[in-house]
Amino acid sequence: MEYNVTFNSLPKTLEELKALPEADLKKPEGVAALTVAALNVFPENREECYRMLDFLRGPRPLSNMEKQFIRDRFMDGKDYLARSYFTGANPDNNYEPGTPYTVWMKDSAAPIAEDGYKIMDLKSGGADSTRTVTLRNKPSTGEWFLWEQMLLAGIRIPTSQDPWA
Image (tube, rainbow, N blue to C red; front, side, top):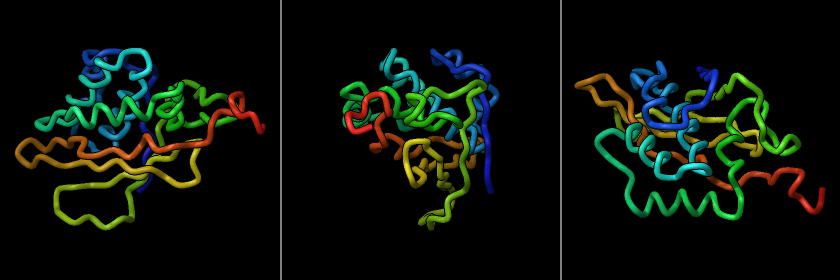
């Protein structure tokens, strides 16, 4: 199944993220899209990004190693990585999406080892293949939480930064 999750504006704080309808955490596609929104905060405010991701992860906050991994992915001016998941963002427009901000994804065909997990494939405008977000369901509340994200792998650099363009 395919999904489009749209935001009229992007949250800049945990409180703004929690005010979005998807923050009820009842739909895995909503949590996956909120993960993209949270990662987009990193270039401006890394601590707020971590707070948002901790909320999306529920009872399993980010480890120091996971925080370092995120920091490393954004090094060298790669603030465009997370923007690449919004429809319309691509190397030719410096990964500047139009508004509203839409994240396209589909249910992954990858096998899931355990019940209660779901893998979503998200499209980046800078990659030839989709990237995954794994979510875990908490049966007692019906909420979905971010388990793992593989969204920060390398993508094509913006055309404006490409010496071979």
